[in-house]
Length: 338
Image (cartoon, rainbow, N blue to C red; front, side, top):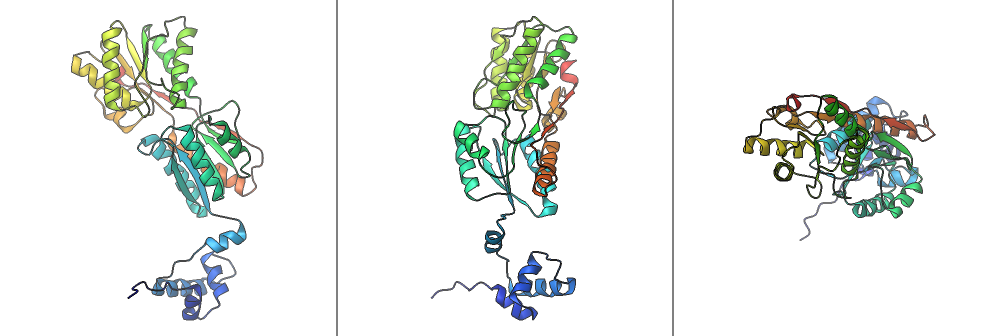
């Protein structure tokens, strides 16, 4: 016996509410031609029947899908979660939903996701970073919808940009360390091509050290992103064993920096008395570590919120030309650097 019950239809709701199916459709789209009293009656009828409005056919007619496609490299990264929260909150008043794709720091996977997303015709697409495969870039350039690159300031943007220079952010940290009299500074992470933002931070470290006429070769590999606390600890161990005269280390992220801090504590290395440690991202763990970690706040929630504002401006016709919104990260000096 078939126990599957037939779903209620728009016609069922219309009969119960005493209106036409067209009025039901308009009520669910909050059409101003439907009075509040009529809409309330329709929504009550729908609730009584357990009816869920299917917007697919309506979207096909209007050429609107009411979703924004987003790619992020990691689903367990607090910074990207904050960006998504800011983006979602900004889009919520318009009823726009996020369709999320997880790339795992793999540009080939990003390319596959972009193709899948564009087949569904999103209202706009948001990608993390400014570097993509040639095919992914071609697809985005010809998408015919707003494209927003975030968390970066690419030299040759595809469309709109909301982000910051990862290299410049780390340069500022190096400048601060040097101003405090440090000369033997190392960098942990950013050694693979998978994490382009981490690679930019590493490049910023090298450029800043060279600009000061200092040794820029104290570079410790830490593995594929996202670098864990354990990998940060292991990298710190190698740094202490191979370059024991190092005075400070800048880590590609707060997680790796926390790992480096615990390794120093395990080995009895006084932080910040004998060694300085800094991270990147202003994760919660950086603020509650003992000592608290010096870090860089990239304002991830602001990136999401500004991206949402930009999307709405473009969709509503208030913004035509591609624009570049530069976020200014903040260097947070805490106890781990004296």
